[in-house]
Image 1 (tube, one colour):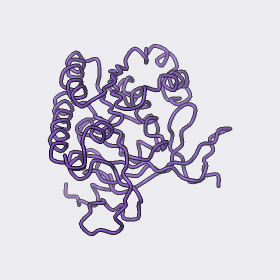
Image 2 (cartoon, rainbow, N blue to C red; image 1 turned 90 degrees about the vertical axis):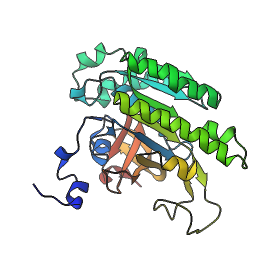
Image 3 (cartoon, rainbow, N blue to C red; image 1 turned 135 degrees about the horizontal axis):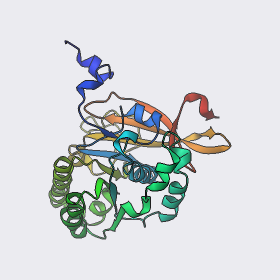
Length: 289
């Protein structure tokens, strides 16, 4: 069968994309990403503070625990915190609301999953601890089949704080070593890696030599520059909007989730909100001006 690259980009031949994907537990978000997170490589979600990035990491940490039939991988997640404490109260709320978020899953099945027991939380205070975590403890969890998702929240924090402006070469060396470890783990154990990233202000104005990936009108860009960007397979940006969204009796500040680049996805975006039960995409009709 002959087909064009445009047809593949549009998703007209999904059978040509091998492998299962990790669901976001939302049909709209999964539709944007053609099924969810790829099992191999690094997916990055960048955005400003309070955009809602951590909500995605928490939701994926629950979604991965479902069976493949329900979009998961039948294992737990390791959640690496590098700056803020782990949001345990929000996790507990999401767990209690799983039946609302996942009406497609039998309630008895949801009750049978011990969600909090399958999320392994690690706080790393410096780069040495971070590298030791991913090379030793995370590898052990993967080898034992206890986890099938790695979340890093956030990838930029330690690399920004431990190096001065004149130490770019040393920072790049550590960054490449860290990303290489993540790639090995992902490809060896067919495990998605989800990295939450900060953003940097654009202060130099229009600059033809700057790599902005098409975000030419943006006042911020994902942190860590071109070296990190080259290690990322899928880059997503999350933008907080001034509009509001409505879901039943709930309202939420609107967010725009945008695909910046990916080898299998077209440039596209969708609106989403953060609700009591989790993150859900909405159609344009759900906008409250």
